[in-house]
Length: 415
Image (tube, rainbow, N blue to C red):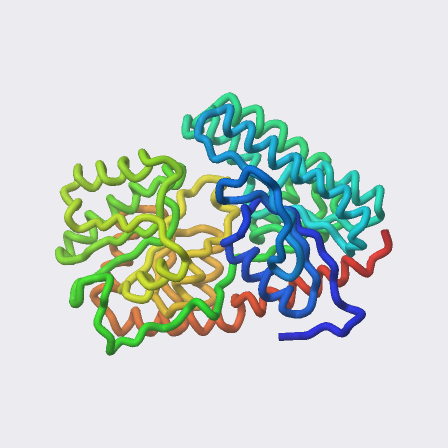
């Protein structure tokens, strides 16, 4: 850890779409633990994840958190009211910048709050940083077009408005922009944002959470002696995980005893039912285990016990720009991985030798899984290579060095 001197300590206000308390590692670990642990003061404006009728202030993640009320009802009026409550909480930006003496305000994936931040940063002469982790405007528009959105018209309007806000106002007004991957950097640059104004920060691994399994220990979550394949991630139908069910049906033709564990949940209950129906259609239901969503520590226990881990990403523009956390976590835990040809996945596997990168093709994906299941020694070697690469390049301690350096540079620039 590089500890900055007293005159290099940052005072940062973060307004994030993550709810309180944040669980995503790029917030909870990178900022709340790594950067705060270096003595930087970080305050937060967040909306409560749990039912909460009144806003409150608490200490969290290196400073204070102003936590807004929420409404967890599922109907459209309740969802609208939840957004209204969030906007009311985000308006705290003005009072915080007026009194907080911050070096910068960072907005993560919030668009209306971004408007408040632009105005407030100009009024109170504070640097404005935008952190874009996902192409949300394009996501909303795609959901409206392909019918995956629950409220298509609302998604269409939101997508158009947010796209205009993001690329025509917020990012041009930002002093700096953090994006999720080099591919996203290229995509955003195509919208007219200068490439040298952006920094790509890929997802990493929490070294404290990832441990190489002790091969001498018996499995407790998966059956001993059974070849087990694991997928960790969302089952949202936009991800087309029925692809993986069909891949697994091909795997079982060569490895009949194999089992597939799917750890994660969908946005809607119907997302998992679609996969269960596909497994039934292919006659593999008894060999596919839907574990459901789990806290990170419990989910990683499944990774520890798996023989091969997989990361299929449906090849559409909104997903090509991502940085897959699951692949980094597989590698960090010494697991050989099979992933399809996706910009960030290809870069990671070619640089590390930690698994196979194959076309988004069911037979090709299945052949790679079978090759690893039938060659445990080779899979173990790939796992060691992947873990070594992550520990050298992609732990959050390493990533924090780069983010800290960039934020300090931004803070020193004249307003």
